[in-house]
Image (tube, rainbow, N blue to C red; front, side, top):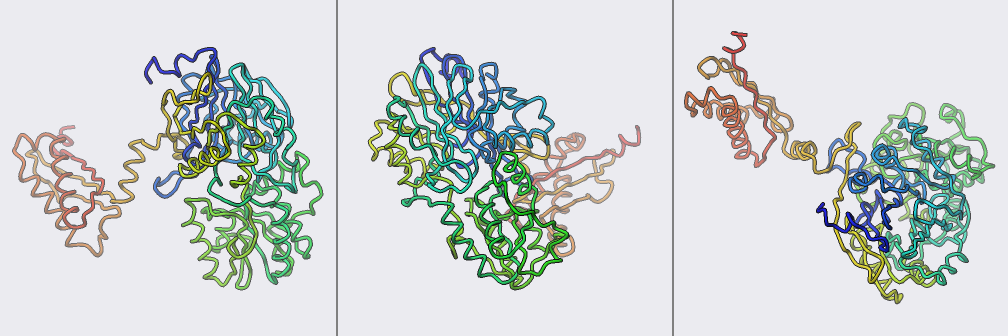
Length: 564
């Protein structure tokens, strides 16, 4: 970044908002607020990679901008415990080494992750009570309770001498959330008298014309649905939705069924919820090993795998790969969840596998069994009417969501609208809000146990191999640079060596012709030999298949080996 950028020389009276993740996309949120000579980070999450990145499961924002300024990072505040808001903390905390702040349930969830990463002692978390206040460096922080699809979602009022900001986090307006506190309407309304400069707000459902709906409505329909099923029932949902978790257990209880929890995250969420006083009086759960001792109509399986994740509990059951649990023809699987964009292929593949085995699949297309945790347009309008900020900053959405949200804010007579974009530094004060700089932003991929950029040559080459295959050629050359034996050629995802003999012969011929075309001096240069053969191999395959496989050529000099 240029030394004269705004990020390098914030003035004492300036207030900035800088998203590095979650703006222009859904997932892996990372938000920065800059004031004076300090930065406050709000949330640090992940998203899950698709098939376009072979071998990669987890993606997260690239924090290099703030890592280079970590001496100015006052702390990291977590708004709630969803993976797209806390999931990157165990991977990136060593680079940041800043204080952590969270409410009790979020703290419980994050502590489990830090323990698994060996960071529990190194990265202590300061617990903030619900509706609590705390000073983090030069930022005065107040939490306001909202409702969402997980306990303890918080909006954050960030107060500085340059102005006050409401950062909503993820939210909706649910008058009957079933688990946890209701949204604090009185406190939200009072903000209108406190001169809120900007509202940085969730845009996920900005295209939805209807209100989101309540968890209590879902409970009514799930109760009725489970009561009408006669054999074994499995329900897949987001483990973090504690209200849905409790609803499913209550529905089973009402119809004489015992519940078995399948999947690590189900057990982890249950432990964290009980630890913080949620769901205190649930009946005991059924062990996996005891499931088959009960009649099929007395069992309900609460499973991970609503997004078709490979190796999740439901995926293993569907593929007959679970050691203890089986579903038979006539059993039912209920998907009490939404299809997250990008997961369609894996979800539909899982559902097709179940249907092919004679298992009934029930989704939210068939019954009212899911509501979102994000606000529709009526709820967004209500929030603007209560808070009345001067500036609307839509985040947490793709471009179409952000623009729809900005249009709605304009309709609500919010004077300024400026959609957030990853890497775009917005000066909120003084003066009119505007983008004044762009800083490096991007994505990091968890590749095995290491973090690499998604623009890494490693991933680019892997993508090329996934689409085009790979060829390895080994040449044994004698002292004159001629072949001492036939070239050894190995094909990966290009030709079937049992079926494509003619095409393989063409490749070998191309190698031999390339060598014959070299002058004596060229044959003594390994780099020249390798490059000419590589070009010849790729040209032969491209002519035959219109593919460009990743091609590697190894040259072995027998005369050198003998002299050694």
